[in-house]
Image (cartoon, helix red, strand yellow):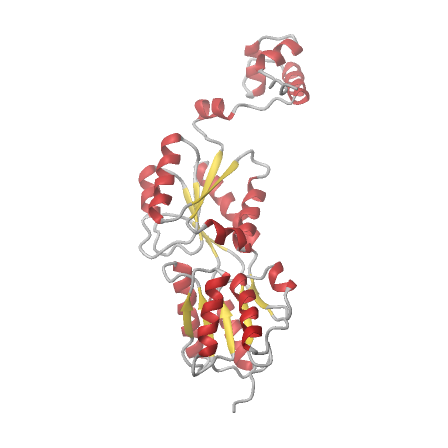
Length: 343
C-alpha cells in the first residue's frame, strides 16, 4: 500500500473552488479574502489534514519551529536518571500548544556540544536553546551570544551575565535537611555529590558547609561522582569502610541513593537503624524501594516547562528576567531515623 498523499494548497483550492492565492491568504491570515471564504478554506484544510510546511515557514519568517537541548553526559547515564526524563516531560508540556518541536542531542564532551550549537545555528535547525549543567567559567553563554542564538539557563546563572535563567535556591532545602538530621542526633554526615565541575554541585556544597557551621556540625565530607549508580555505590563503600563511618549520607540524586541501599545490605549495615539515607530529587524510585527514601522534592517538570516558556518569550523578542521557582521541600520517609548511640 502506497503512503497517503500529503494535501497541498492546490488540493485545498480545488476543493474550495478558489485560487491558490486565495488559499494562501486565508491560511496565513492575510487580507484579500472575505471572512466567509477564509472560514471555508480553513475548515476544508483541517478536514483534509493539511499542515504548513516547516521548511516553507522557515523561509518565510526565518523560524525553524524548534528549540534545542544538548546534554553533555554519557547516554547510558541519561537513560537511567529520572531527573532528565522529568525535565524533558516539562519542556514538552511547555511546547505542546505551540507547534514547536524539541531537538534533543546527547554529546560526550564539551567540544562536541559547542560544535552542535554551531551546526544548529548554521543549518537554522533551532530558534533557541536551553542550557543545562552550567560549569564554572562556562564558555557556552558567550558562544551563543556570539552566534545570536537565544538561550535560557536551567539552573543558577550567576556568572553568565546577560543570559536569563530559571533556577531554584537550594540553600533553604540544604538547611532543612541538615537541621532535620541534626535534630535526630546525627553529627557525622557525608555527601555523595555529582561532578565538581558543575556550578550547581559547587553551590550546593557551599550551602552544606555554611549550614553545617550554623548548626555547629563538623565539616561535611563530600565525595564527587559521575551521578551513576555504580559510582555512587563505590563512594558509599569508601565512606562506610573508613575509620569515622558517617551515620547519615545525603546523595545528589536518587539513582545513587538507591544504589547505596544495595551497598548497605552487602555490608550488613541496617538502614535506618545504623545509617540514614537522603536522596536529592524525589522520584518514583524513592517511593518504590524499601525502606522508602527520604528525599528533597523539586518540581522538576515545572522547571522544564517554565524554562522553555521563558525561551519562547525570548525568541519572540520579549525581555526575560531570571525566574526563581519555589524552594524544594524535604519529604521524610523510612530511610532516616535517630542516630545510633555512640559506642
